[in-house]
Image (cartoon, rainbow, N blue to C red):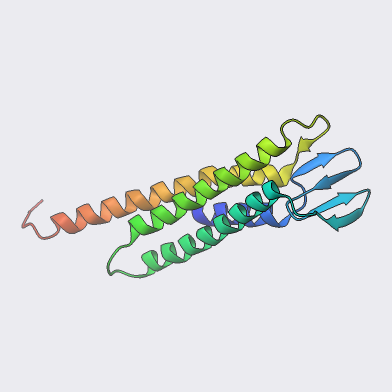
Length: 154
């Protein structure tokens, strides 16, 4: 559930154009809207890094969700540590993207961060918590497998 929420927030944050608001308009990673007229943003290295990291974070989140669902549905060999690592990588990519974007816009006076930007930050703890949950689940499964062979009568 945490992975699904994190991925939903990442996709919505990346796709929307409300990262910052300023007098007369708003802007996202891909488009800038001034007084109701939207246009594509010219290539900027910091926006390119932010956009690439957000798309990669969404890809890692989707891959983590698929791996997590496979873990839930199968009773075979557990890959909880790999799923955990994928969610941690997604969180790291989110952290890089949002930090770069924050540094780019921190010194502007009339710019205010908007809901798309905050959804990106909200996805970060969900992604990290999903990774910790898969790590904990993997540790529990390994300990259960380790003690299942002992003839213990409780």
